[in-house]
Length: 341
Ligand SMILES: *Cc1c(COP(=O)(O)O)cnc(C)c1O
Image (tube, rainbow, N blue to C red):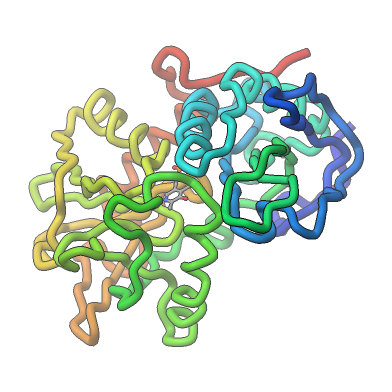
């Protein structure tokens, strides 16, 4: 029985679903864990997550393919990335195999909330790990919780694709040798002021530069950049403080193996942006969101692809990757994980 939801008008907001997965780490080990209907987290007022932001998270989607299967896209990479993130914040990693089981269980239990094929909507999954025991002197907690909940989200491009305008930010996102490469709530906490300010100034997003020299492009608050040159090479910025987007890595593979394009992952200078033909932001939410303009302190870089549609190569990348995700194009081995009883 499908849930009574108008998938097309659904936005990106939290909608409670019946089941979530919880496991607790105590006395040096993760407990058995399992599904629960309880959406409330009860922790001490002094929990490590509340005092010193000891938290990491992931984000992925479940959706229905053209032939009616419920699937997730490369969840093994989310599991692996969460292990890396956890280690950097002194959180005991949640084992990757158990992460995948939790994904399967939560999606299956909430299968009525997986939107149908063609709706453009999906079931967003949010796994996260946090310090749950009391910490007042600065140190890691010794008890932790892993949770994974699901919330249905609407189509990203409602009413059609609209290229966005971004500005070069005067704030930095991640310090050199800091935590920019891990998926932690703390990286988002510090981006909130910058994004509110960008919106107040009429921009959709911030482009962050490398904080050491401010000459190279890093990423936005929650998505990696992808550029296309005039001779159709795909270029993505290389830096130790960029979060390794699974979507970006998948798009680079698709560019090379499906579209026969050359791909370069290398440092990208701010002053070479004007030479690119197309620009997009890659992440689970949109797959690729086209960028029409970048504003660098009043100096505007307008990509030839314009403000009406995606660039040609961006569109091909988008169509191919979404085609793979939805089962319309044959996926590379191991990219699609079917969820079944
Ligand atoms: C999650 C995230 C991305 C996108 O990664 P995907 O795996 O493609 O969803 C990009 N940048 C940052 C900072 C992120 O947190």
